[in-house]
Length: 121
Length: 110
Image 1: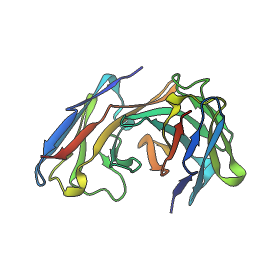
Image 2: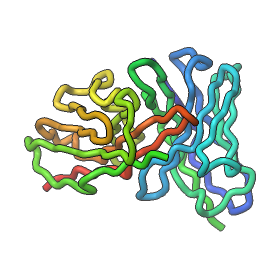
Image 3: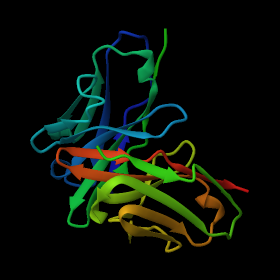
Image 4: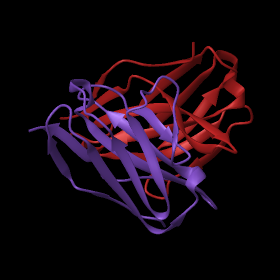
């Protein structure tokens, strides 16, 4: 069974750093891209970036380039999303999702449960 | 950059009724790269439809997708109580790689 299990909720202060995780199981972690998606309170879904754990090839949405860093450790089947200096506007739910990329299409087929990040002084 | 517009913003219907949700792209999208997701409160999104018309594993056949070019539709033939949720369309562009979500349509109980 394919599963993506994300790290728990975080409460941070502005200016602090943070790294959240997404552990994949039940499939070949190095063979699928993983994406990160932000959902601000009461709002829609925003794509942040993607990583291919096989070689750590990473692509960012222009809206998030320079704001976050996506990485992966294939030895433990885990992808990461990190911030060096959080802002109150980073308060949101963050989802990781596996990307299937075939002739039938490119989309997110399995999602993590989400990690709620709250940034408040 | 392709922009997706979904309509209506909210659809108020009763169980048993038919729901028709629209997703319009600002420029032509390959049908292979158009997907639909369902999100219920407090839950992660769930893939419903990919390739514009293919149901994902385990999705009931009351859900169907259609369309091409710039106009796509998600139809729920007979609403069940568990179908009241927010629905998002999503497209993928390959050069450069980018995913875009529509703003969502909320289907609520009338």
